[in-house]
Amino acid sequence: MIVTALLIALAGFFAWLISTLAGGGGALIMVPVLSFLVGAQAVAPVVTLGTMIGGPSRIYLFWEEINWSIVKWYLPGAIIGAFFGAYVFATLQAEWLQIVLGLFLVSTLFQYRFGREESAFDVRLWYFFPAGLVVSFLSGIAGGAGPVLNPFYLNYGAVKGEMIGTKSASSFVMHLVKISTYTAFGALTWEFVLFGVALGIAATVASWVGKRALAEMKVKWFRQIVIAMMVISGLLMLWEQRQLLLNLVQQ
Image 1: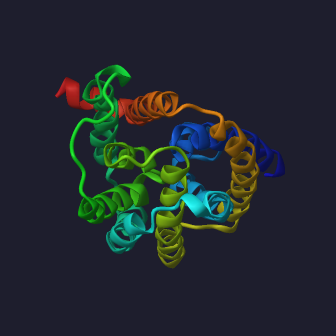
Image 2: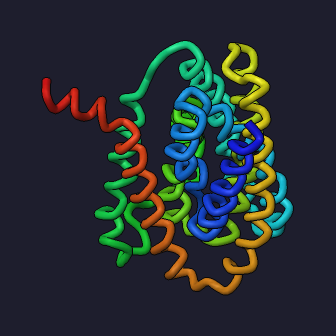
């Protein structure tokens, strides 16, 4: 179990380092890793706990860049969605939602014309309420769905530190709600807690390392990396549900 925790921490460090430079996606990178190491049922609780533990360091690092207007609109919907998403994960099976989510993320490559477009649609501040509701619901089922929010941030004009800091501040309470719900419905075991803590420590270290590199990155490069990360995250989700996709095609 200790060896497994160390492997999770190592993978988590690189996942969250990439996540810091790409505006999110660390949780989705960990989905296939955790599925392989500890099983699919551990993915959502472990990723959620790891993200929650690693969140305060990002909030601290990017505190001055947090857009609190976005947080105020996002948080109410996120709390509601997180509870119902975690409840569905603990009591039902909803793999098909990951397929829908994966297809949306892959489509962002075309929405942004392969990175040549700075925005694909107009975003108003109130959009973050329904976005928080939907994304946190999906996150409760899949463990992580952060990249789905990236189009809203990019189109609103929040990039680099503003995007990362605001997402971290917005999602911390959401993850707390998810963890409470997983625990209440018996989906969080002590073994999962160990793995989540290992992931959270690695995420904290990776955030400090990644902030230095992010400061030197051009906004154009950041946008391109974010789009690439959304597409990769979508492909990972589709790969995770490849058997279900094959069954749908064969029907």
